[in-house]
Figure (cartoon, rainbow, N blue to C red):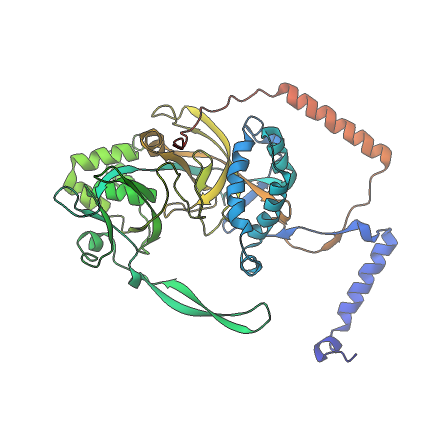
Length: 458
C-alpha cells in the first residue's frame, strides 16, 4: 500500500520520541492496563475552579437530591433528544451530560439517598467563582399575574409585542453532511441595533399587527419583561401564557442602582417591591427611569395551561425552588449547581439558610458571569415577595461530569505504580477512621423552609 506524501515526510525525531517513550514505560514495568486517557478538558472564561469533596459541601447531606434529580431528568429529556450532528457542534460539557443523563434514566427510580449517591458517583464538585472573587451573586424571579385584554381600550392601553419579523434576517451557513457532502442550512442572525425602549414605547411598532394583548399600565409591562414570562388574565376570566421570545439587542440595565446612587432608596431596601412603589408614586420620573434600560423584550403566546409552570430557555417547564437562570454564554443548560447562601425568604432581611442543588434551565439579560444565578420561585404573590428581595452573595459549587476534567491538557499518561497491599490496607483504615471522626463532629444543618410550589393540577 502506497503511503501518502504527508505520511512519508513525517520527521524522524517524532518517531524517536515515540520509541523512547515506549522503552521508558517498559523499563519502569508499566503495562498497557496502567495507561489511561485523562478525561476530556473544558475551559470556562474568566473563571476559577477549586475541587471540593462532597462531604465538605455544607448542607449537601441534608438536601433532598431526589427533588433535584427530578429537575435534572427534565433537562435530560431535552438533552437526550439532540441529534448526533447537534452534539458534535455543542460544547464537551453538553456531550458529557448526554452520557450522564443516559445513566440517570437507566438508574430510575431513585429515592433521596440513592439520588445523592448518583450525583456523587457521576460528578465531581468544584467551587466556582469569577477570577479574583470567592463568591457569586444570587437573585430571584417569578411569573407575574396581571390583568389584560385582547383589544385596546381606555383601561387597557399598553401593548405586549411579539417579535418583529424584520428584527432578524435569514442567511445561509455552509457545512458538511454526515456523508461528507457540502450542504447549506438557513439560520437566523440578529440585526442590531433595533428600536430601543424609548422608541418602542413612543410608538415605533404601533399599527404593525404585532400586539398580543394590552395591559393596564407600563409598570406591569416592564416587570413582565424583566421576569421573562407572564400570565395575563383577560376580562372573561381566561388566562393566556406568554413567554420570552427575543429581545431588541440592547444591553440590559438594572434601573434600581440609579435610585441607590441618588440616595432615594438604600442598597439594603432596594427590591422589586420598593422599586414598583416608587414608580407608582412618581409616574413621570418612573417613566424616565425605566427608559434608562434600553433593553426591550418580545413575547410569544404558548399553549401552557393555567396550572403549568413557566417554560425556561431550555424549552421545558421550570421547577420552583430547583431551576435557575445562568449565563448561557458560559454554562450549558442541565448543569447542576449547589448554592449556599442566606436569603430573605421569610422576611425582608436575610434570615434563612438556603443550601440546595439546583439545575441550570434558563437565562436572562441580567444574568452575567460564571457564578451568577437567578432562582425561579414560581408564580403569584407568594413567589413575588421573596423574589423581589433576593440580592445576596453566596457560594457556588458546580457539578461537572466525571467524563470531563478542568485539567491543563489531554494526553496518554502512565498511572502510578500500585501501592503494596499492606500499605493500601493501612491507608484505607486511616481514611475510614478520619471519616468517622469527622461525621461525629459534624453538626446537622436544618433544612430551609419550603419554597413556593406550583399550583396543584385541577
